[in-house]
Image (tube, rainbow, N blue to C red):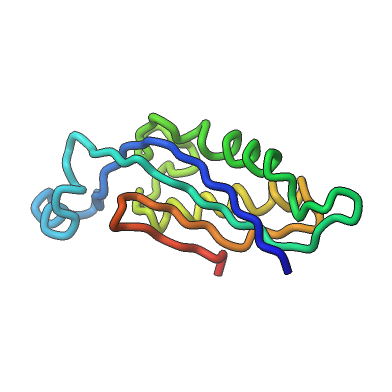
Length: 139
């Protein structure tokens, strides 16, 4: 099994809050991340695909194609956007990195399978800050 990885970058804002809670409860649970005026991050999105190399190309997936999929399906929709307000696939969802990475998986997995029949999305790592990141394997 071969694993290939592509990394992309984007900037986005969000606010962590639960509308069913009071402002005080949101501040208590989410702290500065519940700021009414949002806050932003310089995200890194790392996508790993696994599979066997194609006999003709030697690729599990053409990394240019993988990069194009990530950019078109995710980065173009979230870069310099507010995840809570501007991103259709995050509408009505908590804008935590945990939920965000799961929604990204739902978009990328079928697109990768269609583009490269010998490949399968294996892993996504979403880096929010140098100290905070989430990893997701689709489970």
